[in-house]
Length: 158
Image 1 (cartoon, helix red, strand yellow):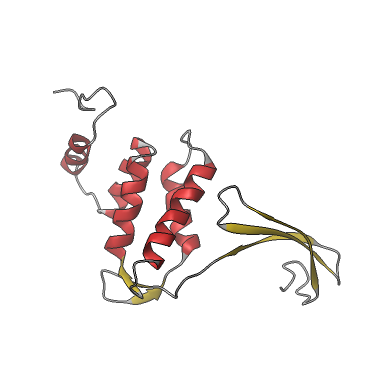
Image 2 (spheres, one colour):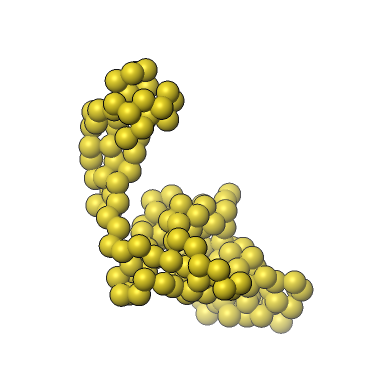
């Protein structure tokens, strides 16, 4: 593992432990050249996934890009970061275990929307507004009509 500080290739693992959900190994490393300390994460990758974009382009699946988009949706919301980590890991596992080497961007987006819907309504609406490219207020109204608060009443007043 190359040191992010000096670029040295000699690093040692000082501590390894699984994350809470046991899907990742967290490793604390130290660089033999500069003494810098840093953390790496190791995950199982079942298969190399490609994402078919709406434009027709094919790009490698990027877990970190998925995580960033979800984090933007939940920004300044009272959502436990571990819950987001578990949701993203679950989506990745679903995609990898589907047996397909290529997934559509729509499939990925739908998995994220389904996950966010159960976590935080505001994050769900934020993500959906970008993912579905909302242009008018009626687009939001239609989405809000789909959401219900726990007591069964619609979110918007009629």
